[in-house]
Image (cartoon, rainbow, N blue to C red; front, side):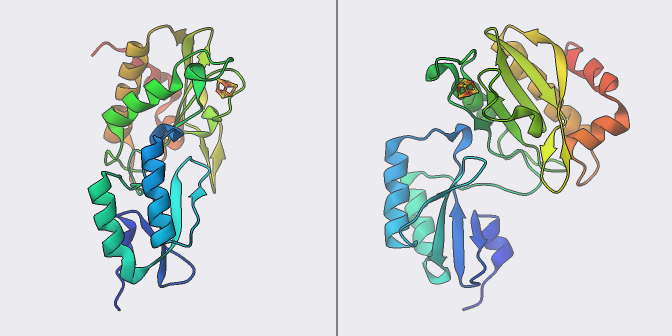
Length: 228
Ligand code: SF4
């Protein structure tokens, strides 16, 4: 059977080292999912995968070992269950978040609610390069926000923002934007402006940190604080 691996990748099926097998990556922004979602994942993994589910370092649930001939049947099940797949490439990626104030006694902000709002506003948006966002509820920084293009950390029930980090074949630490912000609405607007700035100014393949080196962090800050 002929396999179009690139087309399948765009639908969340990543070709494995065993060329006739695919690992299906699911969209799990914020890292918290309903048990009904997990039941579907388990059903698919038992029926068509190897009875295993893997969780990636960016909180994505992944079902490995799906045979190429079963991809269509799995797609039908996903569609019936309303389960969305991961979207990779030069886009806004799924948002990573610790459990934050909704669960953790150290949490200073509701990371899960903010992750959902950011996801709903930006997930999958086409950009010159990938853009990763992470949210962490307190100074313990479980979600490692400075290793992301955009990071938000809870501080004294307010929001501290970071820009320009990445952690992969290149590593750079995101820079803090001061002061901290008290209102979630302000944070959402700042993130909107940052994503728009990235979309308008980055060159193909240029991550936010490199763009900020090129245009200057102060110039970027002016754009962020300018009232729209
Ligand atoms: S970063 Fe803070 S709020 Fe989030 S899980 Fe870790 S300790 Fe809890």
